[in-house]
Length: 108
Length: 476
Figure 1 (cartoon, each protein chain N blue to C red):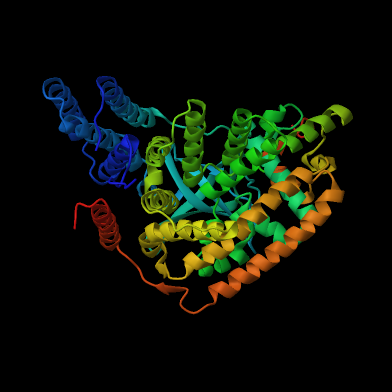
Figure 2: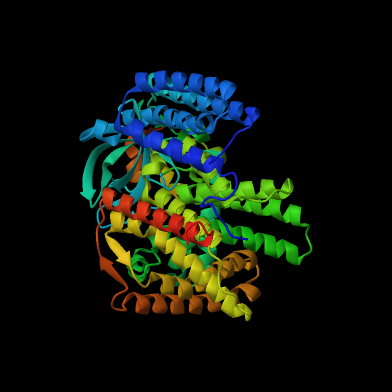
């Protein structure tokens, strides 16, 4: 089948040992790992949050987040959640879905 | 020269891969970590002792045993993360969407991967019923959902129902995901702009890996025995690599540079289509091919196949239990063995040589994947060898034309006539596939169990071994 040189044999033994150690570390790692839910902390203030935080909202990707920020910078703060309707790409369906998840200064 | 070994040359990686794979199967079935770790140290000591004293063949063969034990330990986390541990019921799930949403009457259908359930790590695929209709391709979400299971044939299908207000939050999209999503959207836009709706769905399915957009075509491929063409696999990777190399060589770019450019293209394509097991296998094999090209050494198919297998199983040991992984490896093993061991009859005329090669490739691939097809899908295809000979070159030509269309998309003068030709090619291809699939006797229903599939492979290897004994003159 195959015959190894001393170097090859050493290489394969070390490789197998590393894989075994890696397997054990994976088990330990997953036991310790506990993913944390990032954002279930009430409504998001769309007049204050950054583009990245806006991306936590359902239906909002990087492009829409940027458009919301641009709109905010060009036209000032949103007065209510319904104002999101004026942002290009945000239709009434998305806005209706976001209503419970966002807030504005005016509403606070 | 008469070949005398089934696996010619130093196919070490292949045997180590077999050992590692067997270990993963064993580690998943029998959770005895203490035994495996103790066995590992005993075996390592034995190898050291034997190799110092006798330098025997046994010492080297035991290295495969060492990989077996490494495999058992590498597979243990699989047991911890099995979906059955979490069933059934409502839960809080971290899920990454891996397909485009498919509009249903009440919900969007999506494929996704689960990473965490109620704070416990998990790793498995699910079908998502998204009643909120807000989940997007390649985004990761925290959702409140119901996890359930249904059995289909020999495989379990897990599903996740996300209610209208079930999406809690979406995580920011990473750079690679954004890049892949952008590339997918741009490619889809090109196909939709130039091709008719049917052809655009076909192209999105077979070229971009978005099978969910071409449900109507799936039964046609399946009945004709060419279902492997719908999945993104090694053939796509090979086609991309060959197209890039040929295009660059046409402009007199140096071979080494063309190889590197093709590697970059193949890597991006693999990431873009989701890096599934057959693609990962083909990617590693292409990488090995490039490396051997640069160090000017011959490629050993079994060695690179074994290395690809080891890399795939190190990425995710769960792939070993996926049909796509098994089919891909069985297919390449069949091609390597069949084309390596048996000389093909000479053909003076070039097109005839092409047909001959297509036939042998198709024959050996079919011979090796038949038991897996019978095990997973309950079908044995009798005429698929001929169907593949007729349809695969045609399909490859369409794929190359689609690459061309993406390249000339900014120039409508070139794009429109090319798109018209592709529309016709796809129409004729699907018509031919439909006709061939309707031929009586194309396939018959037959379901293998694991023992029958194993017996088939034992008989196949015994037949190959006997053939080698005969041609090498050991049996008169």
